Amino acid sequence: MSANCKNILIIDDSALMRRVLSDIINSDERFTVSDSAVNGLEGLELIKKNYSSYGAVILDINMPKMNGIQMLEELEKSGIKIPVIIVSTIAREGAAETIRCLELGAFDFVTKPDSFAEAKSDSFKKKIVDMLCSAIKEPIDFSGFSVPKPEPPKPQFVKSERRKVTKGKKLVALACSTGGPKALQQVIPYLPANLDAPVLIVQHMPEGFTLSLANRLGEMGTIAVKEAQDGEIIKKGQVYMAKGGYQMRLEQSAGESYLTLSKDPPRGGLRPCADIMYESLMGTDYDLICCVVLTGMGGDGSQGITQLNDTNNIYVIAQDEETCTVYGMPKMAYETGLVDEVHPLNMIADAITRAVGVQ
Image (tube, rainbow, N blue to C red; front, side, top):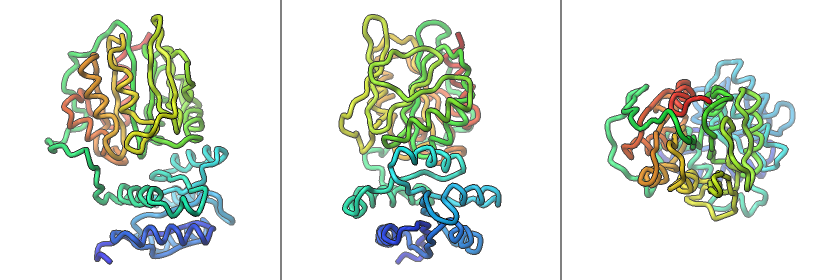
């Protein structure tokens, strides 16, 4: 065991799940399960007692005495900040609860496997370990994304506004991942209802969760937000969120732009994948495509934006490192040399509005 290994607390009422998660976590020398609890009340007491000793917490939602949401509410009231990873069921009825956990400060979530065989799979193990690495800021191997590191961008960095257009046909295409659901709540509700462009969003999420997220974002502001539907024509002042578990593309016919959803294979383990969305915009008749990259693990979006730059007039806005939950996707976008503006999260909506204007 490494001398620097991080202590992890597991809170789950299933003895089997506690055992599976313990085996996964203890198999990595960077982590060790130091404690476990069978409900939120017991877990809360452990956190308050041993707050400084835990690197992260694995938390179930549905538990007796105190559920995961109630425990997160108590942590928020107490002002305790600790990385919490939700491990929830993929059931659709639990999606709204998962979104609520993210609102309350949970780092991210991993869907609980449907079977014991899946729980013992390498893919589930990788999800848990990678999520812990991100939450605790341990190094992750992002194979295929090795780029020389430039000087870090300064907050509110603006490279150029020369590619902006004030007239013509415009589109906003946004990508985010880890930390994205909460970040989107500080961006989408602050866009004006008369934005002079449609907005496409790829947020890495499994099927069953994006509808709840879209509905929640729509409740918080004046701009209309919906989960994308296959074949629908997109309109200005409307936000379309890629459906979890599907690849979203834009196609054009007879002067109209419409979305397609498919069960095409994941790319880099991602479905939806931002690179695929951006690639589908290549050669379209938009006078300006405003690409926005928010917090997220990995480098999804950078390759697609690079290819899109070869065929279309693009303007790229990225979130700064300080306000990112994980400075992965915006960092990789910045390293392409194509980013025009870097801003803290609370300035992204204004930057988008300035880039495309209002009707």
